[in-house]
Length: 434
Image 1 (cartoon, one colour):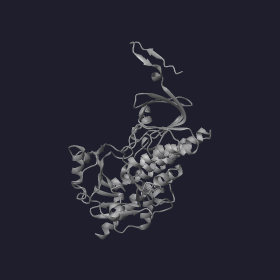
Image 2 (cartoon, one colour):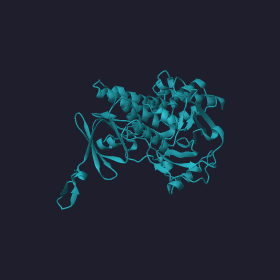
Image 3 (cartoon, one colour):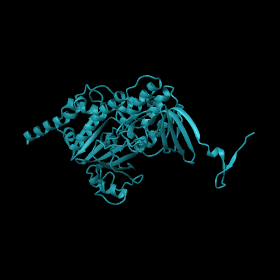
Image 4 (spheres, rainbow, N blue to C red):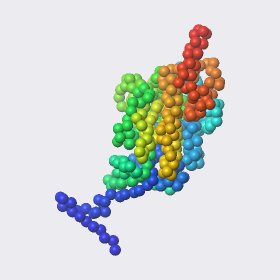
């Protein structure tokens, strides 16, 4: 016989006691966020028989920027056991990238890079891509609570208690030995614990959308990701997908972004007039949705880990979209965090400072240099140099492919000065030939 208990509150309102008792769950690891970073973490933990649960604020599929991957991602998806499900989707393969400025072209081919590693990756509509990952997680037995928002986290000596709210208003308390925060720009733990820090990269903004690419050129011209430089610090992206849609967007200093007035659609249309190469291709082509506008893209935190938690992906740090490093760092940090959490759960010694922070910082520092030197104009001088040195180009290409931990590459090991030195040599050469 089933018995339902009813009680009266202080105002004599009746309620079902079952509706008022908060549901409680216990897991080894709670992953916040189901994007690429969280998915890679959860998949690797599940693969190693760790009791893991994922909570995600949004309902999938949902739109997300970060549609261009770099080859280093492929290593991480493969190790997490997620590569096969992605390969079946027929995403547009990305074999390199093209840069255009004042009619000059600079092209990088990932098969012609320094060192080992993948020589291709994908350009992906992130709504479909991310849902493919979470569908695979579900198939592997990972429980995912979508449309579930973290409301509060209390950390104790050996565990944490996270209170989450579902769309129907009910709440659940999840007790976990460890939390991997992969919440992206939601930055759940960073906001709760006050870990926000000044970004390492200058403040830039972005505006972007997708279109049905009805005027797409035939052949490789219509498949190659391209970055068109409008001004030294202003650039336009073109990312074509295999489904016929294309992602377009601008990145630039907030001062430049704010010169354009009107709705986001009107602003993006005005900006398109500054594109020499793509203006006609997208003239009068309607946007598939109202463009998103993001101010001050770069993010940073004061610490990447603490007792019982670690921050991965954009919840920790985001540099700039110019070289598509976001998903690569997200999956790299997500996989690394999962490995270290497993060691800690097995009572093995973990030096989070050395094994996680120092490791991730090395890669971030390399890419930070390339982003800064892109906006300084030094890297652009190298990319568009008419008499480019093929060895140097291969070494830079390896960095742009995401292999930023390979210290056999001089442009990784000596990144802080090599780009500036090469740019100065190019300047001297150009002065001598004038």
